[in-house]
Length: 247
Image (cartoon, rainbow, N blue to C red):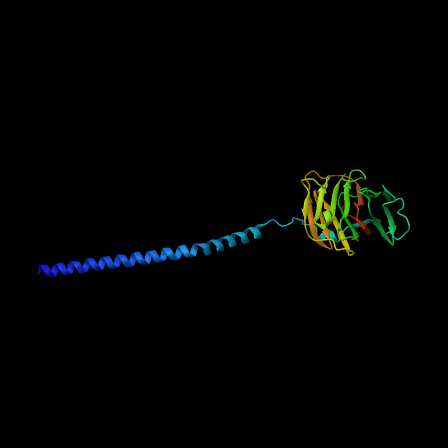
């Protein structure tokens, strides 16, 4: 009898040990599987976080009225340069560097001695013109709302500056830390690009070929009256200037 009870006790003990071993083995397998899965989970989590950050990245903020103001307004000035000389509407700082050629204003080696319109800009305005560079370095430039007809007296707009690597809107200093900039699009040598510049209130929006490039919101906007074409060294051409009042 005692022997039988002892055998039953041993049998139950063995069952408990076997059950514990199975449980331990199952738990170990789950833990191992989790450890093996962790790198994959980490990569997946990193990818998800990256996608979320990209989705949340702030877009370029253009005026909510920008698209509408690309079409409306009252034309107050235009110039197609179909003549031999610039005339009284323009302030020429260096007559050797700025001249009319084949119906275009041509500037080269001006070293930022710009060609300035001798007419006040309205506070709310749309400015349009065509621009072409005959150099792979690009470097098409204009200045708006300048306080005086000279370089860096207002906002400087540069398309393809620094050997066609930077597009920028700068305030009073084209190298300033508050400069807004982007690396695209690029100036295409020999292509006629269309500039559109819209100002309404504290915001300046800039488009090239009807596509938004940059926006500059200024809490203390410059109130200058001058617009000008500018040039550093490469051969540039400008044409079909139109200025619309949005007031």
